[in-house]
Length: 138
Image (tube, rainbow, N blue to C red):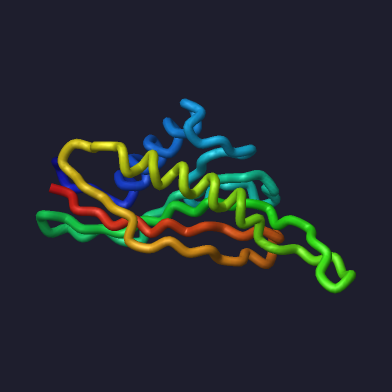
């Protein structure tokens, strides 16, 4: 494979995730975006892809993120309404996406999920599940 840039790895992940959504293997209420393209006011279940770094020596290595955004749910705790992570939707979407990504083979590269964590996004009353992807590109 030619040298990959961060744009190339974003494109590869975008294509894989978009295929999963289009085929119905992943069901979300929103869309799939690369970093910076998700609507600022989105309250939908969206998946956002970005690459942190890709080396230029051969074989190349890299790190990307797949972030699954889900709106918080309203719950009552001690009689007070609060917003908390919708852990079931984060689990359902994330687990389906992990299984889908694990099944895929892409020529001249291998990738794996290095980390999986859930993060609170305070400004938009959402949490997102961050899947950190590591790459080896041959």
